[in-house]
Image (cartoon, rainbow, N blue to C red; front, top):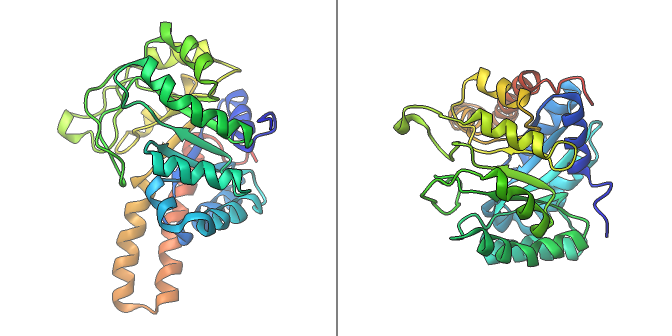
Length: 290
């Protein structure tokens, strides 16, 4: 099966051509998925609804099917993506569901914990071949981001992406999206004195693969607005976001459940999540682009 008309890749292709960024947002439950879609429709923005493997393992096929239904029935283009599929059981669940007719639009096959590029390729290729056969686009990480989040393994030892190795890596994996390490990291930057991204390296990679391989930015917690704008100017089209929307949603819901009826508390928290999504659509320049 071809990925020529793949929803994720089509959204990212248009973003790259238009010079705007796509919010690829981690959703943990039905309410956050609904909030993202609600916000995208209001802002007339494309988006990507993103799950972590731990969320997929919890909800399995029925929750994935719900996410696909709510995303694909929206009035704007929204794809469904699996972030950081690293462990065998998570990859088997996700790829197995695709082969059974419940496919993510795209899956990050993450073997960046490997000791060498060759091992990374060897680990990723069998899964990528199965994904492509099911029409699922794939994202890979070249280099290594430190940190961890949301049930993911904690990774140490930053390895910046080497542009001289990137062409071979993408060709041999057969992947469709590149997540580079340019000094970004998962989790908080505060213990490290704030973010220290190599934006020239990011731009080099973006130019190297322009029109062929979209670039995805991971590790966006706590970043200043200007850094988001700058990464888009430097060619990033997919921007992964997690705690920015999750934390206000959880805090609002926890407080609301103390003194509001359950449906009202859920609706209020959903709106908090949605309004933060809308803020990102405008920041990334994707509002009105759907």
